[in-house]
Length: 511
Image (tube, rainbow, N blue to C red; front, side):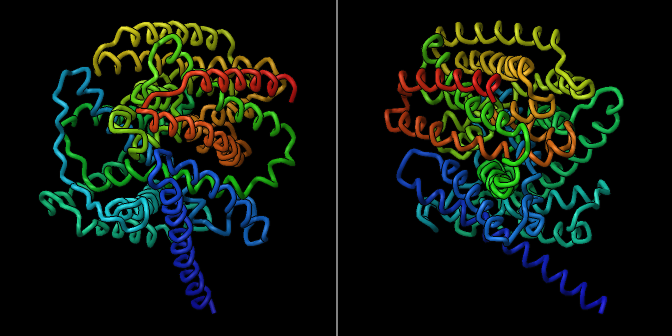
């Protein structure tokens, strides 16, 4: 009987694996089909489909909030750090090239096959999406095995999941794409997998080592290590692992998070205090995005998507906009600039996580350090705006955007937390509202890791997902800009920024 039960469990694992694959990949493909022939990002559609699917699974009684009945999707929703590691590495390469005056003529070893497999998605892009799914499963399962994190319903199956994920990701290469030096290209993919797993393990132990002094999450150390690796290996030609995760990693992770978040819609609205979190998160998305954009347009005198898209992606560590940039939805220059512009502002996270870690222990925000950081942010933002007005080439624009991004992110985080501290929201819920209000990579990953306790870690996927419903405005505006010769309309941006400002003030003091 015991053997029979084990066989049934093994079969269920395979069913979960395949079901997750057939839920996530078609969702991304449908999203790409809907926006095919337009300049809009498919992430807009992934938001709606993901939340609706999660809600439907629970409402129909197939699953419970949190999707414990779909453990592979739940596992995928917690792999944000893997997608970030790749972004940080590529960003480190771009930083070295910019500040080291290195030639930006990286050789391409993969030439895409442009034959459409699905409307809006080429054969090579389809392979990259499916490979990303296998990579997330394989890398996460392997890392958990090596770290001894054998918890959860899938704990007994990490070895087989690691095997399926890693083997699938290595052999999934488009046979019709043109690849220079195929044997070396495949070996590069395996090396990249090993490196990512190594970074995860080292980051985990570094986080544990200094935990008694300062509760910096593992994602911070991942950022430092991979950015340094990228700067050192700035000539490295990207292999299939980084290629896949850079193109499709964020959409796959977001799709999983949206499904899990959608599953908690009914449950979370019954929890006291979540209305204020959602209200601030929703209007905060509007204000910090379009407020920053308005500053660049009216004071920085730039309306070009090449500046606005990667500039705001970096200034907010913004998950969706970064994903749209790296996937190539907002033009070639935005694609190239985004990893670097996300990396530099992320360096200030040592201050963010240090102040928040102490604040979490005390149960209230550290006011004086937050005010100091806010003043620094204001000065850097002003410098960035002044410099981008005078920029007359790509290099000058990038340097100005780096200053603006650093400053606006500090303002968004500490200015927002200071505002929330005057309301009635607890510190844990304030951090969750702040992560949601700017769709912030690092803070989201840190809360997922348990920086603010188990309850907040359980709720963050939902609150983070729900505020993505603002993205129809975001991607509609960027879509209009792409159709308008990559020039952003001015007046709608200002109107949305003012709506967001009124909304965050109201949600802070009235909800």
